[in-house]
View (cartoon, rainbow, N blue to C red):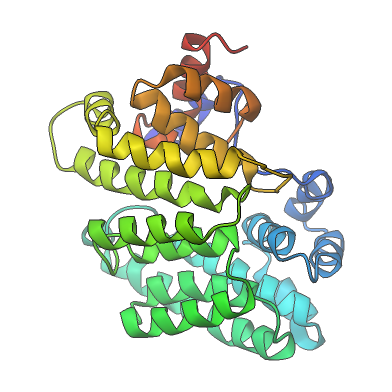
Length: 325
C-alpha cells in the first residue's frame, strides 16, 4: 500500500521513470507488448541482430513488458532463438519482481523459494539461445542476473563474464550487470567494483558511455553508506561525491565519453549517472550541461533513488535548482 502511494506521488513529477534510453521503435512497441501483443516485440528483437547495444536494450525492456506473459512466450520460443532469449530474460524479470529489491535478510522464505523456482527456469532458454546464436552477447548478459540470483558463486559469474566480453568487450548493459556482481552486496567489494570501473574507462573507446560505470560504482558505494548511517541521504551523497579523489575519477571518465561522443541508445543513462554525481559533488556547471540533455527521461533506480524514495520528484527538484525546464 505504501509503495503504491509513493509511486502515485512520484508520477506527479511528470518524469518518465524507466526511460533513460533512446529507441523510438521500442517506444512504439512497448504498449502493444504490455497489452499482450507479442509479435511486434519479437520482430524488434530479431531486427536488432548484429546491433548488440540495441538488441540488449530491447531484450531488457521487452522482458519487463512481457514478464506476465512467459507462458505465451514459451510457445513462441519452441523454434525461435530470438524468442528464447526474450523468454529467458522475461523469466528473470518475473523472478526479481517476486523477490523485490530488499536485501536477502528481509525476503521471506516462501517468497525466496518462489523466486528461485522461477529464476531457475530461465537458464535453459538462455543457454539454448546462446548455442543457437553463438555471436550474441545478450544471453550471456542475462545469465549474469540469473547467476547473481541463483547464488552460483564468483567463479561461475567470472566464466559468464568471459563469455560475454569475448562477444562484445564494450556492451553497456553487460558492464552494468558485471558492476552489480562486483559490488560488496553481492560477490565483490568496494575496491573491486571501483577497480573494474576504472579499468573500463582506461580501455573504453573515446565517446563510449560505458565509462559511466565509474559513476555507477561510486553510487553503489555511496548507497551502501546511506543504508548504514542515520545521516540524511543528501548529506551522505554530498560528502561522498565532494571528495577530490571521487571527483577526479568522474571528470576523467566523463571527459573520455564526451570527447567525440556519438549516438548511443544508453547515452541518457550515462547523462544521469554522471550528472547526478556532479550535482551531489557540487560541480553544478558540469551537472547542468549533462542533465540538460537528459530531459524528463530518467532511470527508475540509480542514481536518483539513492537520494529519495521519490526519485522522479527528486530529479525534478534538481532540474529546477539547475535552471533547467
